[in-house]
Image (cartoon, rainbow, N blue to C red; front, side, top):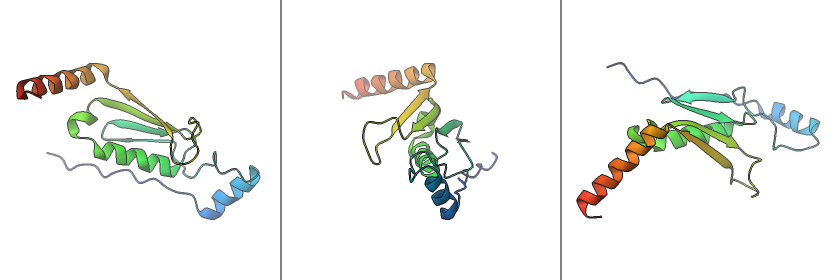
Length: 119
C-alpha cells in the first residue's frame, strides 16, 4: 500500500499584498484574492473558490477531511462563492457536486442498514 499523499498546502498572499489590492478596489476585501490557487484536489474531490480565497479553500479541505472514506467517494466537487449568499458574515454559498450513482448506493445502504436495525 502506498503512503497517503500529504494534504495540499494553500499558499496565502502577504497581508500587505492583500491590503494593497483591497485599497485598489476602494477598500472592498470581498473579492480580493488571498491565494495563488483557485482550486485544488484532495482525496479525489475538487475544491474550488470563486475568488481564490485561502480561507474558503482551507475550510473546504476541512470539510473533505470530516467525511468518511465512503462519503468522500460520493463527492466529486465542492465549490464556494462567498458572495453568493444573502447573509453577511461567515455564511457562504457552498455547492457540492456528487457522483450520483455512488450517492444513491450510499443512501440505499444506509436505509437498508437502518431498516435491518429497526431504526
